[in-house]
Amino acid sequence: MAKRRRLYSERAKPAKPYESKKKMSQLLGFDTEDAFSKWRVSNLVKPTWEGFERKFLDTALSEASTKGLQFEEVHTEIIEGEARGRRHYSTHPANATYDTALEWHAWAVYWLVNENTADWKGCFFGKHLDKAESHKIMFIYLTFEKRQRRRRATAVAQGKRPRTSKAPPKDPSPIEESSDSEDEEHIDLDPEQGVAIVRWDVPPALWEENIVDKVKIQEFCGYTPAQFSTFVTAHFELDKHKQRLVSLEATDKINFRAAQVKSMQTGKPVTYRLMTREADISEEGQSVVDSDLPPSNDMELH
Image 1 (cartoon, rainbow, N blue to C red):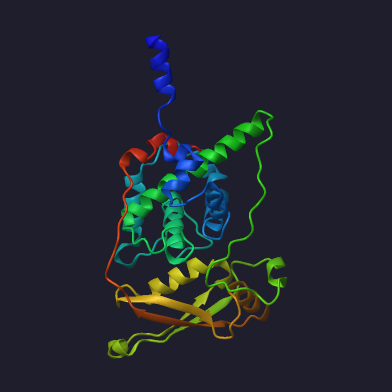
Image 2 (image 1 turned 60 degrees about the vertical axis):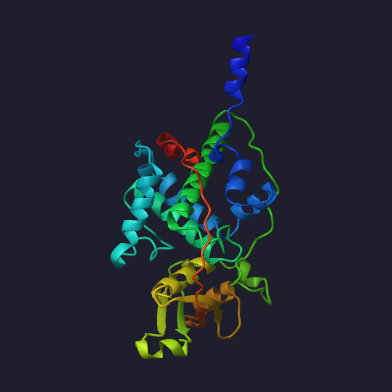
């Protein structure tokens, strides 16, 4: 009886967040698993995950990466990669190319965090988490997705039919307003095409600081809305100037994808107007315990 009781206790050991869809959705702050599923296929996640999968997981570089990665390594790589103006990850939202597994994991975590902090529908929006905390949560989420990928591959290899669910409707970014036409959705964008010009309405309080108020962004079609706003925020150093982005809109009032299609097809830049306000100082924090982190060998489950 004691042996049976001990076995039951071992089986009942609580699952880690990366081992359970329910726990993973709770860690990210979703009320339901359905909301979590919609988020996973939204523009806040899908472009980054697909880039990570296509450019790293499906390559020989991934197959050669036998050493497990730990959170501290990835977090440190992001901080050092962005320090002293290097911008090793923030300047490559599209067409990123890296040589190591560590860099690819740092890139994926960096952009998952930025997408979900900048966009009002992101799971981190308004929560004011510090970098270490948000990086840790997305590191765990990346492990979750890699485990799901491995399970699907195993099911296929064993001749099992993987469970499928009906795809949820597209969940656009807040800077991508509803379109007058659905034609843009059927046009494939070339990520190396398109140009956007952003003009900042600099607040009067900053007029004496001799701020450059315009930037020209190449390869505009390679950006998602959140990546675009993140790049603009970083370029104009809004944090340094104690400013927060209020709106970033095309001057001809078209939505984000329509602006990309227009620039790609006409070969002309689309102009955006950036509006900001003085940032609030107050911050809130949440915590993730270290026991929720995966062991290093779990980070190599492709």
